[in-house]
Amino acid sequence: MSSKPPIVCLLGPTGTGKTAAAIAIAGRMAASVINFDSRQVYADFPLITAQPDAEEQAACPHLLYGFLATEEKMTAARFVELAVKKIEEVRAGGRLPILVGGTGLYLRSLLSGIAPIPEIPEEIRAQVLARVKKDGPQVMHAELVKTDPDYAAKIHPNDTQRNARAAEVFLATGKNMTWWHTESEHTPAPYDALKIGMKIRLDDLEPHLANRIGSMLSHGAIDESRAAYAKCSDRNAPGWTGIGCAELLGFLRDELSLEETRYRWVKNTRAYAKRQITWFNKETDIHWFTPGENDRIADLVETWLAERI
Image 1 (cartoon, helix red, strand yellow):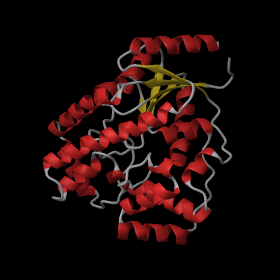
Image 2 (cartoon, rainbow, N blue to C red):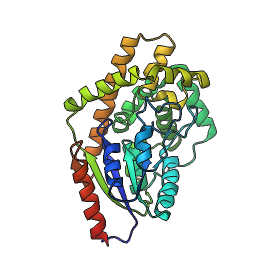
Image 3 (cartoon, rainbow, N blue to C red):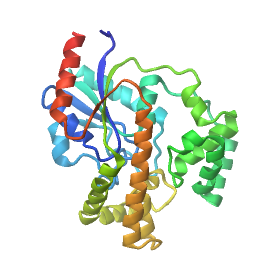
Image 4 (cartoon, rainbow, N blue to C red):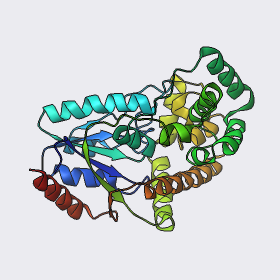
């Protein structure tokens, strides 16, 4: 039995029903959902990033969804700061915090401690940003494959923010991101976490992802991206680097046909889900379920909480 405050963490690849599982738990007890998906924080892309819809959000409080402007960036350090604040607010209200998402680095940073990366000198940051604008994030990703293959495997070649961050950290410290995340001294958050994962074969998940993307396109994803573009047309803005957003931006700029947009969106989403599966398979102390086993998941949470008393 732990004296640390309890939190539940629902994790796994995109499209595996984590939100539905969280709502099932909230149907048994007072609980609030806290997002730890790096893309679902953006206010302009609720449909494209598959944020919980109005009906789901009405089932219980949902926090840290859709609050960030497209031009703002989210980091693991900023997430930890926001998440700790929300966890304490939820606990103060007598509710159970349920963290839901698929950004493994954010959850690991919360539970195991954030990497104490020093402040990057402004001249190095400016140098890296100039390179990104000149050469593009793909060139920097190719370099990252050589200096930090493990971290390169976790991020998309088009992800301007993370590729630039990895480059500036390596230039400034001489250590790559994998070293900072695994070897440096971290201070973990003081929580007792029950980690619950959604387990599914990638080949079984892929058709669902393709159908979901088709539904998004049918239900306004293009209009959503067009409205976001009217507010922020900078293709290097952090919000535009996410999967789905990046492909639709190419469509809006007449660089991709609608069919090519759909194809790349599905392909890149599948690749992202594969990276998520690989990441979470390396995590420890996860109770695995198949998507849809929501009653069994809620049973486990109730039993776990009862044993802590």
